[in-house]
Image 1: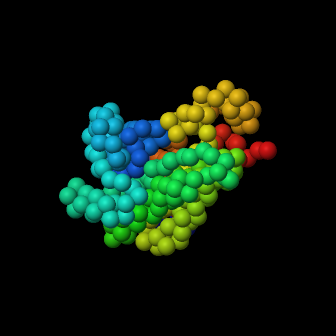
Image 2 (image 1 turned 90 degrees about the vertical axis):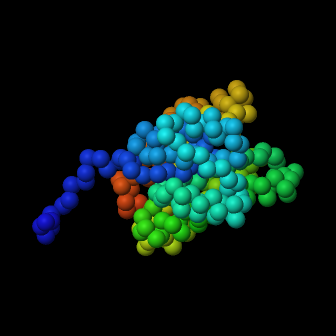
Image 3 (image 1 turned 45 degrees about the vertical axis):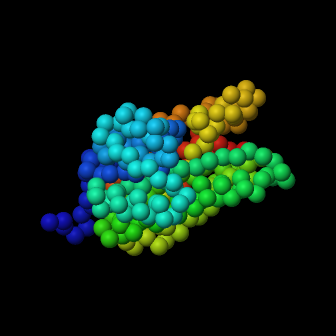
Length: 260
């Protein structure tokens, strides 16, 4: 029995994800796949999501015991049916990482309205759809972890991506709203804001020597991020180590948002 005034020392396996199941949207490549691999190494059973079945199957072959759950994260009814069906047939989803996202680069005065709508649906609405579908089950268990992938553009803007910047600002505020509504039900809802990482989404920038030189000079760490460097933040937010962290956006950006 714990004595009055006694401080409980945390368990040494505070960061273990053994016995937990994690769904990562948009996880057949890039950041989503790297996070899936990292959470698997921490002990989680992985559920990969995407729309391209061949890419999804290829990714699953690289993670032992991984399952796949194909659905369009922008389709509310499809999301609800997929999540409810999985929970009924396979069991609980304990951890959700909302990673699905897209980019479109065009000066704001020429930005196509349809591209703006696609950004809103992919980067913001999907977080709502999948987050709500999973949370409804997590609330019943009084436990759950939701991690939304924001961006360095949650805090900063660059020319040509104003709508993307708006969507990632919305992700951070939606994360706060999730925490505000769902913390009382035992959920921890947080976000990770990656800086500039070498991913397929950034392929055009990575291949641009002028931009890479600018980025290296602008970032205190002096380089692009490696996707595996996001794993530690994800494991922390997915584990018991973050049991009293809620509504927070954790920037993993080499210091770019800390300096002028």
